[in-house]
Length: 356
Image (cartoon, rainbow, N blue to C red; front, side, top):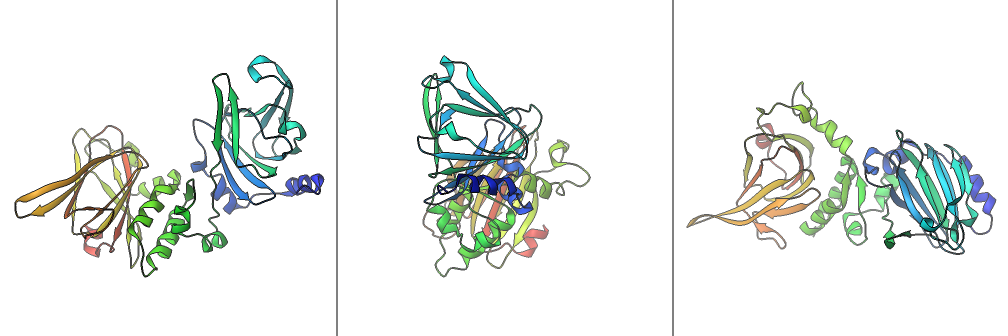
């Protein structure tokens, strides 16, 4: 990278994202309503590549990338505004010295960004934007500056999810690295297949995988759209019986179920027994969960918890390390806010349960 500044710029000019890359790095799941979402998609000893997804009007706070570090930027979609501030002054102490509008498709080598304080902004109030940045030496974190002080923010890394990427990725390797990963249901199944195929697979690895996975809301909402016939689940009547279940995958080792708990004035309850091991990931809303053992003295609640959004639980009817032992599992929901939960069962659920 250091050998030829223009060669990198020329490469960016001709660079385009494939459909798979758009889905893996800039799908609806990669945008936040609160701040630009930045992820490393490549990093080695020479350079790093960062994809940023900008919702309308979003900006990154003023920062530098470090003396001696070079940055190239291409706007893949939308329009950005690059602003530089006066040397030696903090942004709140000076006016913007230079503004450059970076149009869609443009590629730039931003020479002064290593030592000059600058920021970037999506200038549209209605349209999202996507950009690619190349840093050399590699950049893995930003230090942002404001009147309240400095904030260091590490950039999470997205592991490739295409056929070539999944070959080198495993649930265990994900557990050994920081950050979270955007996965489709297909990608999740590939990682579950890889782990369950091991002679000594580990339940805790499955729990870690689910905790680190970020599933695309658009994908699971489309799956759920068939759960309530002729009606969008988020607009279903309050008299509808909840939960509604959708089969995502049935394998010789496991079953994946997507459950939708709609808003209801009454408490919705689902009781399971004898399902072996189960992992529950809350994708949206909150879900109450109780683990109950059936002893000679009657049922005993061994664990009761409220699963918040993005939290994961692991229960087992077997004696298993890291799990609450449960003969019966009761899950319930009583809120005006709907809940969506993902469940993985091992061994797989019988056909009778799926049809019921």
